[in-house]
Image 1 (spheres, rainbow, N blue to C red):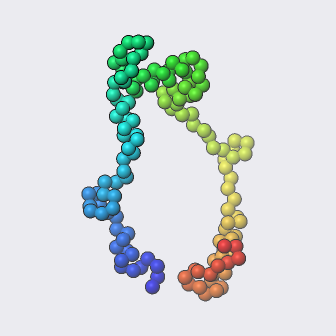
Image 2: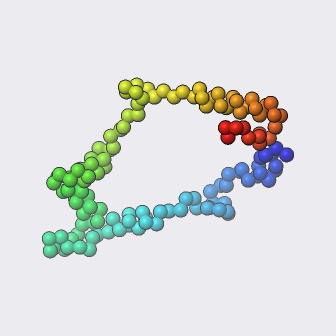
Image 3: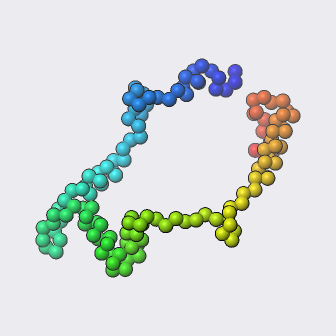
Length: 134
């Protein structure tokens, strides 16, 4: 029997509908650390700033810290600030001398044709013969 034609194999290929019983019915699990951090970032920070009580959220304090460090000349903070505000700068992908990327599939095509020729010559319908370059 040809691989993948058994009725049970085909039954396994049917996608599961949302809410159906079975594996991973709720989708990809939530990221627990990210979830906890987002919750904490929205809370008021229970720290004193310059000896005074604080009424700012953690997110606001961190944003202010990044801004202050960027202003003082910290390159990492400046890059983070600009990436968040302006978006990351696109990095062009080009070939030699800024031209298009050239890809030559000649060798791969020749190897594939050679394997197909050997397979056809051997009469092996299942494709299990091993060639010298496999």
